[in-house]
Amino acid sequence: MTVPQRVAIVTGGSQGIGRQVAQRLAADGFAVVVNFATGKVAAEQVVAAIVAAGGEAVAVPADVADEVAVAELFDVAERTYGGIDVVVHSAGVASHAPVTELDLAELDRVHRVNVRGTFVVDQQAARRIRPGGALVNISSTTPRLSMPGYAAYASSKAAVDAITLILARELRGRDVTVNAVAPGATGTDLFLAGKDEQTIAAMAAMSPMGRLGDPADTAEVVAFLAGPGRWINGQVVYVNGGAA
Image (cartoon, rainbow, N blue to C red; front, side):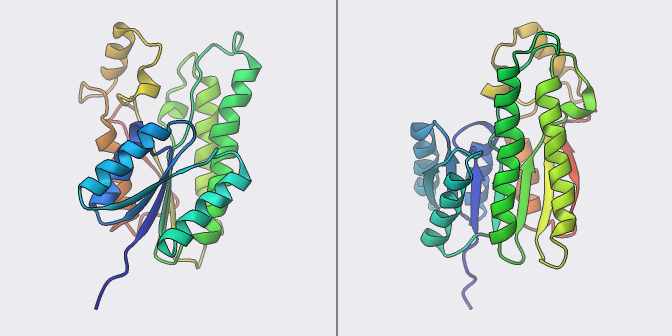
């Protein structure tokens, strides 16, 4: 008996954690829809790497906060591969400044992508993921750390946690798990941007492991939740090397 291929959508799949997740799920046998907002070339490189390794993937653009574009993203996944089993929502942006100095336009940008984007993607995922599937939102350890300068970003990720936990309970009886994975400081372009070596070293030292996380550390946990981790549901799983 042939086992039907499982299908995953990874938002923000052209770079950072999303890129690593897309490649890991492909290695696990998923056909992967690699979503991107502006990084078309990078997304196509991810697809090429997956195909070269013997997998299946396609790159699809969509602004995650645009409900029409996200609906089309899910439509493409269903038309191309016949259904959706896993959605990993990794797309996000960051902006760091003290509350007294933060440009409110930046606050709106962060919350539009990170909060509204999560709601829009999760809404489509909740409607379309097949039984036995999983939704994984990428959150952050920052809401637990209360670090100065992180109010905009941390508050947006606290909202991601809330949406995740509530949606898990709203999907009672659907056989679909809903979890968030909350990385600590991870060596991605999003994290490294604008930070000097001293700051990076200090944040790496927050973990008893004495290093920054690697995107592969998070991808490994996501792959578990997307596959065998069926009894984990309605949780925020911290992947931070013990930093908090």
